[in-house]
Image (cartoon, rainbow, N blue to C red):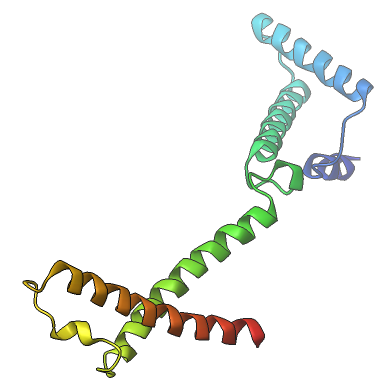
Length: 153
């Protein structure tokens, strides 16, 4: 019988019956009353310890249920689809940054694309703006080719 009680205490899905709870409450009240009288026998002492252990385990189970990491899907802080989107957005941001750096790095070898490197800061504003637009036009064209490759493959 003692082994069965241990199994019940460990199993988080076990719900005590009404009579079990009433017996435990009666034993707890008797122990409390006997504490004041000074009449505690060894069996009551063991029962009091078991009751305290049960209450402690129950508190831990309740704490785990309220945890955001609980096993119940309904209690998860986020849906999996939201988590997937967050991760994908982070990866997309990183890929875009890396693509930007790679396109710029490889494009530096082609003087035909970037005539703006021959301009100085004292060049007319219109010419600097045209160079900036030219740079972005080439970048966009290269980026489109890369994205088309990923979409079709």
